[in-house]
Length: 284
Length: 284
Picture 1 (cartoon, one colour):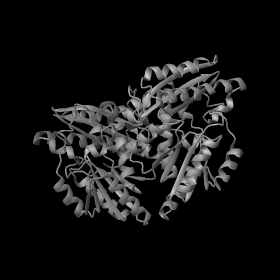
Picture 2: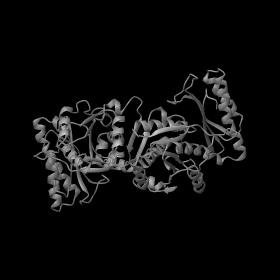
Picture 3: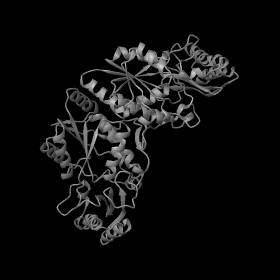
Picture 4: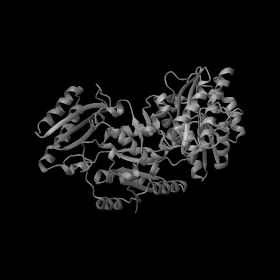
């Protein structure tokens, strides 16, 4: 397993691999890998001749008051997980390599997709995401790339950007991986104090309660939202940023509970911000 | 010579050519080809195994009151010029193919480079240019691409965008090709009535006068600008949009007349907007 820190080195290896007919599978991450990332790597291992993992905590997708500085990092542990998953190359550039002095180019996804929900709560977030993912795709030159569905809106923005810019990359969204008690895996879970960790279970509780009601025939978004909110409101330190039901492709509000309806939740618990989601008619 | 209108078709041909070790040279244009474009094609023919010409009048780089609708087009003539120059593939997509319904992604070059001069006169112009060039690069997957130095700022913006996004494309700027009397070749020259065509010679007159003075030792930007402006003011139907001396890489104003100093001119003559430029210490 090679660790590559230079963009030109990364790119020339990938272009040479492509010329020799190799298929490149890519899992971009911010590191501090958990079982969710491992599931992406396992799928990537199956679907590529060369499996590339990138680890880059991208400063441009963090707002000024967000957790860039304290975002958890553990390269030695990530390296062990990557090695066990059969990663061939870890792309591990510094921020100065990705954004050298004079850097001035940004990729913007406009329209509702990137301005609602996370885009409204975190101005500039998806501009940072779209820009870095475009740059990572161009550095790694993958045939196929894997993203977790926990970051549901991110996946939609990346699909849009990839299609719009004609990047020749197949985007694969992979199911959310959860802890035994249902909490969605996230590098940020490490921030949670024990009591906060317990309160965070209200998120999956809310998704399951609304999903169960929907599958039993409740077709009013308003009533499903009330059920979910009721569940969340029971926890004293949990502040709702949004609970909403959207069409999965457009992320616009929907009045219809059908196979395209997804419930998305963002909350704060203490200093930690958590997101989760579920397709309402699928069993969460 | 093949004419390719579909992006996926274009891309799969290019990716297959790259996999078979072929070097792709690319000349992106808006068509209505002239000797300037032909010089790019000749250089491309020398430097690639496969020579690709794109013809696309890109709507997103035109402002609402600009000449998109009347921009000159003559595909049959372009095809003959391309064939004579040894083009292998003409990429000729429609606007709906490049910007299908739901299209939402734009590439922005920020900082002074894209907001001064043409960027100030034509808001949104370079956003359209950067976006379409990124898309064309990703569709055609070239190793090397050729641009004329007449669009001096465009070339600087494209170099910046290509470097920033890690597009693996070598950008080659080629010298301005002029008519026998010195007018820079431009598809827009066809707009000029005979008397406007004559007045347009004041542009190259101004560049040559200032260049000669600079080479003879005049080192005051203010005096060089007065010389150039005096030359332009002699023509009754010529309105100056800007005459300026800049550093060639940053396009910021410079107080020093050295090898990096470029004089840039934009004027209107009647309804036609023309631009030109010259390195002050090189013989124009």
